[in-house]
Amino acid sequence: MATTHPQVTVEQLLQFRKERHQLEPLSPPSTLAARILRREVLRPGLALLDYPDPLPEGSVWLLGPAEIHLLHHPPEHLPLAARILHARPAAVVVAENRSLPRPLQETLFQEGIPVLRSPLSVYDLYRYLCDDLAFLLAPYQVLHGTLVDVYGVGILITGPSGIGKSECALDLVQRGHILVGDDLIKLVHYPDGQLLGMSAAEDPVQRRYLEIRGVGLLDLGMLFGIHATRDTKRVEMHVAFVSYDEARDLDRLGLEVQYREFVGVQIPHYTLPVIPGKNLGVILEALALRYHLRQRGYFMAQEFERRLSQHLQPPHEDS
Image (tube, rainbow, N blue to C red; front, side, top):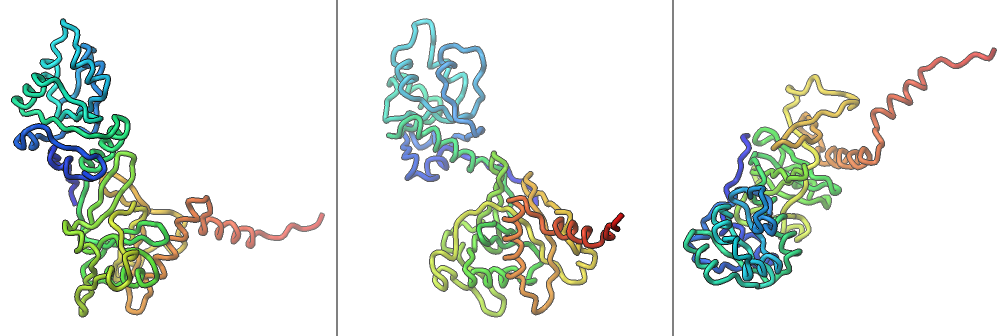
């Protein structure tokens, strides 16, 4: 499916993880519809001092004690309000519950630039805002599938409707593994190259349900406990369930790892043929354990090939 680049407003930033960044708006509600265009959180100290490099429009500005002191005591030859308006920040965030000069604050309000305030230190606030914007502005795609956490490995399962994805997830949860999402999965590309997966359901309660054909909806949190589900997981493997007729030319040894790309991130890809009575949960457990071994430098197929080659070599004759 196509990649989506989200549009994020200041209001969405306010509501996202608000118990952590503790932001409160000082400007009228009408200003909170301003769009945030960039992930970067800027500390515009040098720019306020007439530094020549232009600031990108639509960024979040974070003002700490140094910037606030400068705004209250500007050099006479620097029109700071005009420079801020020319740069058009998406929002101005003030740390440590500091205050802007009232004339400047009113000018920002009139120009539709929201002003936010937080009691946190500028260092903590910078870290939180960078993380929140990286998530909110990350490109994503939504697809049909099931996402499970098996031995700490995030496995994305896709396949035709009714092929057994949800039944496999139920079997894995019964074995002690974790469901992340079923039916609609949202994949998010983080800036550091990670692929994060989560349920695309907006209601948190819906995320812990599985739909089993012939049975109906199952609340895994009630059946198996709160540890049976989680909200997000890094996706490290993709497994495609296919009918047996579509899987006649599959690799038998696994010497070469295939990859598939999601939202610009490539992850290992496997195709599993599905036939009645096949225990797919056990196979996914084995794939997860083998993934851990490969992360440690042990490759089963290559080791098998090496040992087979040694066994087939003719014995050395004594001279």
